[in-house]
Length: 112
Length: 114
Image (cartoon, rainbow over all chains, first blue to last red; front, side, top):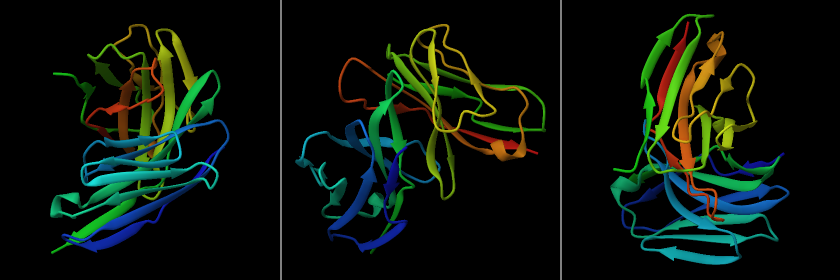
């Protein structure tokens, strides 16, 4: 099985930087995803890491360390619209294919 | 427009009354899956399908059935719904030929079983 941990809630100020951590334990690792989910809506894709290092995409960056089973999502220049849940998800071998397992999500509240 | 659609979006039903939630995608994706989302438990995979006529259990398959007779459709069937299946359900699809399984999610179906 897989074990994915991320903080339940975080609060940050508009314009600031926030880092959301995710730790995981799995076998057959094939990548780690970050998704954003606004309340009552479907998750939307933010990033994917399969190799160690930092992937940058605009205000959002994601980091992966496979040896440590650790990832983080970095949000810069926070905006009010960034208030949402951020889901860490691990892709790993399962049966004949792969399965994506989600963490419980981190609810981020951005305050003025 | 590329999208994943689910129907119905909202459903209130009674225990034991069979129901089907439909899912359809127009992106020619091979991979489709169903998730349920519950407070404090996150998204949990129910079933997935790697291609037509190929389905497999996810983390929480009990009480659910699926079928994949066509590439675009992946219905979720609850033969005898129970109150513990009250949840928010998402269908998702992606290509399977690349390493990056970026999944596209449907808008969700909120199911209440009384």
